[in-house]
Amino acid sequence: MLKVTVLVSGGGTNLQAVLDAIDSGKIQHAEISAVISNNPGAYALERARGRGIPALCISPKDYAAREDFHEALLQALRDSGADLVVLAGCLVVIPPSIIREYRGRMINIHPSLIPAFCGTGCYGLKVHEEALKRGVKVTGATVHYVDEGTDTGPILLQKAVEVKEGDTPKTLQQRVMEEAEWILLPKAIEMIAEERWNAVKQG
Image 1: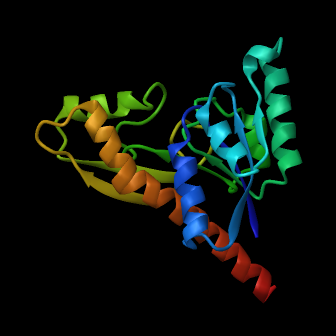
Image 2: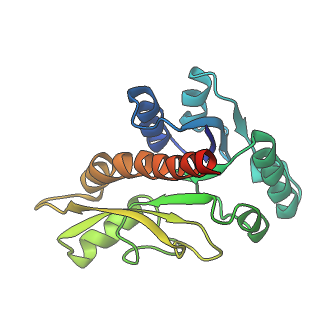
């Protein structure tokens, strides 16, 4: 079983999609070993605790220096035994030390078709505001590997979503989640887990 640690800052709807995919059998070769948030009030932590999954809050506010926070986060990832780290609405900038250790084993979900509407400062509702401002007819979501840039790592999966007449940032955000994010993230995790499973069987 691939051990997955999820980093999340908010409600955890993508985390819920992964949990639901495990329950339904869409994910068969992975399990969530821990959920970590920088936000003590993140509902994602409650979702994890409700399933008996270790749920930790590691907040930069609790550390005198950013480097200490980064070290604590790295240690928590190591302690979780993560084979794969999933950024699911994680608003923390991942430092190079963690990227180095988990290179090729860390993925992020972004609510646009990268390279459109991505990069520093383009997250959450802002992505959909920008898409509507530009007047695009199609948007979507992307799962990509994490590297030292912002939303610049190799793309794993993408799914397009139609922009409809009268959309607001909120309605578009909801449709992108339902039609793309909640489908793509579980699919990406199972793809990676199954590939590893097959490699172990053959090895």
